[in-house]
Length: 364
Image (tube, rainbow, N blue to C red):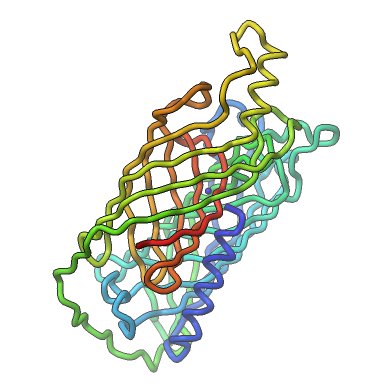
């Protein structure tokens, strides 16, 4: 899912740290052991053993000083460092830096973490020295992990324990081919320690009105990035997306979207030419238009000045068949004031990534 989402989140988190740095925080360590899931037969030869690793984390606790904290049951936010030995000579190892949120359930004994960041792969694809690595086309990868832990904090003098499961994903989002990616399912066990355990403030109950709505707002957004087709060594090309959509906020957490996208994906121009010459049996003339137009619906989840967007679209103008007519978008927005925002999103077709979009927009 996203090279600079990690920077986006880490900067946001450190800004938050400066606002509540008097609150207690925890540090934790999770060791893990698991398996790489065969989500694509093209990586079957890379699954030879059980990966192991370690995740170290800093977690800033919240107690309701800001209204959004009580809205989400007083989550933590923080940063993680991870190491994973993928137990395969062609994959090597990966080192990751992440920003994350921890959300609590079942009287704060169940913790769900979602983390997004960037990873460094020690042994990426090389057409001469490592052509068997069909998973990672570059040494820099976007990475996501989710973790579900039974989490018991401050059992004795700030010390606690946790155990659970995680899924760790590495991909470069088609920034460079190949990009078959890996997903590891792992079991975790570890310990945590709370700094300031003897000085925890009381949780501040919400005083917000439960009912909250806004009138329909209108958005204009421009996104751009660089990607490559699945044909190795074809080259990286820029793409541009112009979007216009309306949103309706139904409560403090959620808004719904409806709108249209216009895609200018120049890698498709090269891909069309390639298939017209190399595979005449596919009946590609080479004159097909590389531009596409889609309509979409979506949802936006507001967390402080950040929001998470999910959108599902359908191409209504689709002159060249590439990965099907249905597309989806997942990513983050960061608001600057009431109207302006920056966004980093992943545009894909199902689980098949097309590119990372870096965007700016205005909400009127």
